[in-house]
Length: 121
Image (cartoon, rainbow, N blue to C red; front, side, top):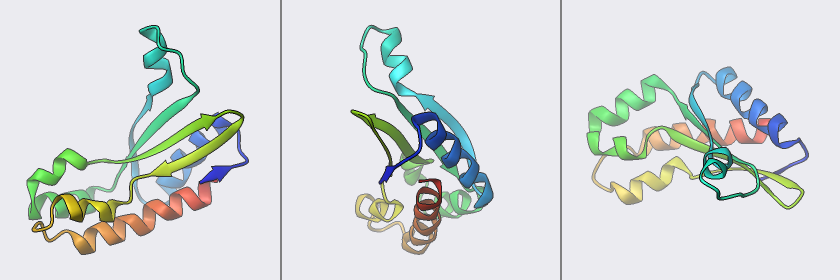
């Protein structure tokens, strides 16, 4: 989703809306900065890892292997002069783990993550 905010403004908005929705920011990774340290320049890119302990605990109880897909990443990046906020839909996890029984949890998390992005833009 494109946003009219500045890059840093979009990152801050995602972090703020995450807290407002009862989720927690576990980490914000400066991917562009890490790559630049190794000599690979690119446009700004940060990945904000968001999580809700109750949903995570429920999902892990059903199938611990879903841990590989936790927490939910929200990417904020620039393409040219435009800033975008995006995520992988949590419901996509059910395709990777079809027998996990996490469909309802994934739908609930997805609804909140999409609200975070919509309100942050």
